[in-house]
Length: 333
Image (cartoon, rainbow, N blue to C red):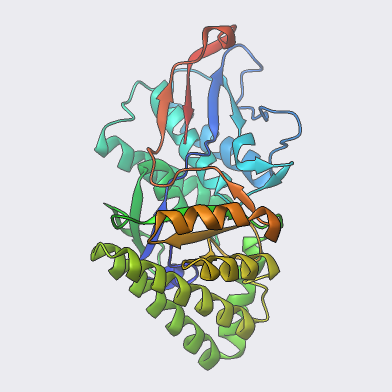
């Protein structure tokens, strides 16, 4: 998530980028005849929702496929030391599973209309196991690139998912705080604030909505310096929302990332619900971004080597050594 956390649920525009830490879904023939999910790497056990999500999608849409072969899911690239990074592994699993079903049915993954159909399926599956989510991360996982996303606040229907670009000269660094976050818990606390103190909720969300709008406008204006300023405002607004809701949206690690980015002329903010996971640091100067990255280890922050705004769901040929009894393709996002 680049911007729009929390307020996207109320209909505000969000920006979300596809990252090149990928989930892999593969059809495997002649197993037990039912859509089975297995993790792909030792020490990278799947979360229950990832297993449920992949199985739900596979079982709901296998009518599109001529086979009842099993599926395997590997999200190890979205883990660090067995812990989730917060890069949207459930969204990536939904996108990759939808892509696997489409590819198995002989449908093209590089066609825009087909991608939109894949997005609808991936969103439906993701909503069944993570109803608190906005679906913005699913849109980026399927479509790729940097996506301007907006949904209906009441129905959750996607109103906009269009491609935009980072301003020229923008440098973005992804850092991991080392602490996992529970998005559902944070969202529940924010929603509880709405019930207990509507005025406080609206003040905090209004400030956050304004900050998200500033960031969207900076991207539209192709202004890297304005993006950095907006990211700083966005971080502070997320912190104020957390204080109002008694939720640790900006925890110690995220606060440390923001302070370090500011010391190097940039700005950092939580990516996603906060409470840990990853922060994004934005700079309008490449040298400043490099100095920030070099200072991360001494500040208990881990630089995550991922690019943002990359291709979404795609089909890859498997290395011949991996073929054996497996299908001759794998789908990833």
